[in-house]
Image 1 (cartoon, rainbow, N blue to C red):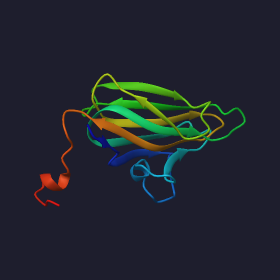
Image 2 (cartoon, helix red, strand yellow):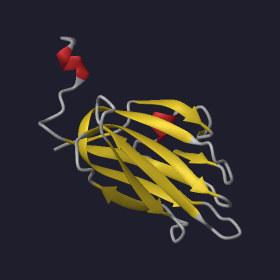
Image 3 (spheres, rainbow, N blue to C red):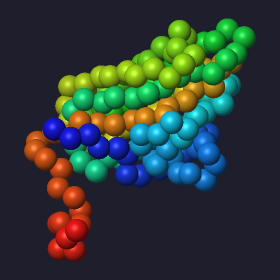
Length: 149
């Protein structure tokens, strides 16, 4: 199996990329300094990410910022390719002020995932999101269009 990363981000509400202008989907690929975050106290935040193909296992690197009570959760909702199935995963970040890897496997192959920071006093951030492909090896788009390498 192969790991794939988000290819696009949409419905972006109160999620910001760091460094600014880097791109939300690009910031979730492996890297040490790129990430996305939502500030503390923003209740209407959401971002929808699309993967290139269906995935099974999901891995996400996330953390909370600092606040008075350090209360923070990351709500992750998985959707299939037709948005007919969904499954929710809540990550409690109260004890994770440093980047920490979390993994979860939904009950169905997923293609889309939305993130929502649920916090009153600490920012929520994600630096890597990846899915393990299901149903075979990922074929690069260049080969499918005939361009080759």
